[in-house]
Length: 166
Figure (cartoon, rainbow, N blue to C red):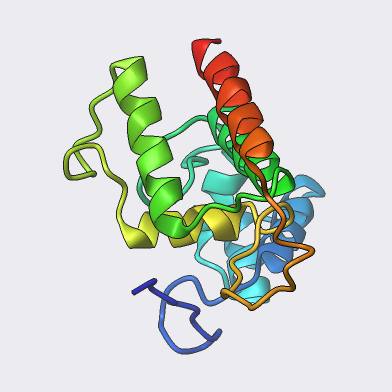
């Protein structure tokens, strides 16, 4: 299951401030306020304000991303093309597509078992790309809409082969 760890402000002793409040404290220090005065006024630890002012500790929190942004964009485009052709892919299809991509590139990801991303990774992938992807449940459709013939299927595999070859 996907972890939802949204914390309310005030529920713990550390990081009990918003980003806008931190920016205000840094601006106040740039305008001549001392770090101790900024700490007392904004109720943000002094070292946090100084670290932000000097640009230290600026990396993202959490596990580094597995795929680069352009690789994720390429996968999203591939999924969109498949959906446009009338063959939407499931979460398992997404995971297998990513595994095949990693194997083809010669990448070994220790976080994945046999280079197959987990369900949580796939859900977070769709969450990161929710402006282009959505997870839908199967619905009954009319026969006229489901008219995918042998010519459509062969065209799909021909286009897929061209795409995979590069």
